Image (spheres, rainbow, N blue to C red):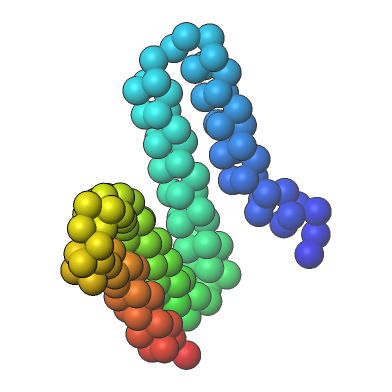
Length: 141
């Protein structure tokens, strides 16, 4: 691996770190948080687009038809998105259900069994996402 290859791979990470530092500095100087968040999302979208386009362009330039299709890479991205988004959803569900379950249990200890089921249903969302990503990854090969 040459120094140029390392710089190309490190460029998106450096860009995102600089974006975060600029956003923190902007908020500390009194800029609106909404505008700063939109700037963060725009920088993430730009890095994502660069990371998606560059491998396709490099494989098309070398004439590698199997790499140009990018099906394995898209499968990895799909598996990561399934796991990541389902874990975020599961975290939101558990974050809302667990305090309610604790409150219900403190008022009536007999309600523990019913309350814990709702917390477990929230965690089930994350398990379904992981199951889908395992199914996607089992098809690669």
